[in-house]
Image 1: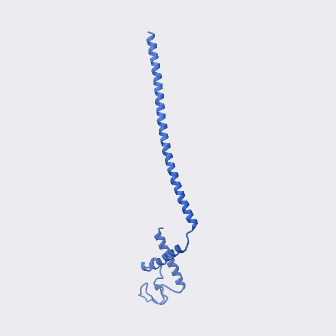
Image 2: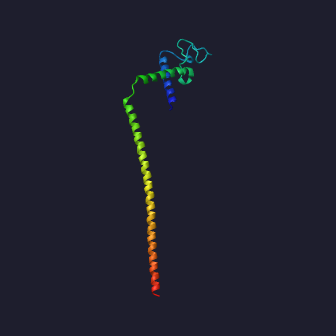
Image 3: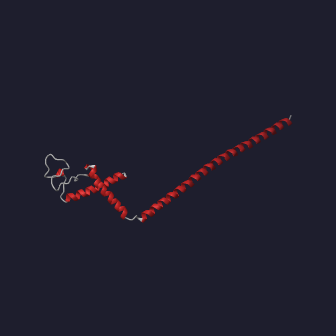
Length: 158
């Protein structure tokens, strides 16, 4: 529910509360008036107990709804002005902000460690490749020595 929808829901509740109290006080909607002529408008007063706003909030005109909105705005403003902020909520909000900062720092450190691990893996792979090349070179050198020795043996036996 958006803030605007929530605000309108509060206004509807305020109107419904007024409507219920008015009904208990003996008021009624013009459509429900026993003195209502057959052909009269929905909002026309027919007796002193008729009130043109005795309808569900959704059926009211925007002009009439604005009365409820003004009331709700005034109550919310008074509540904000008179009710001191809850220190425990402020402390909690500060703690949440501190934890967000800690998490950002932690995430930066983790990202740095990931980069370092990636670099180490690359270095290990490069070293493995170098070692394999050195082993291959050593094997080649050994084969060359063996070949040279066989050649010498072959020439010396002639």
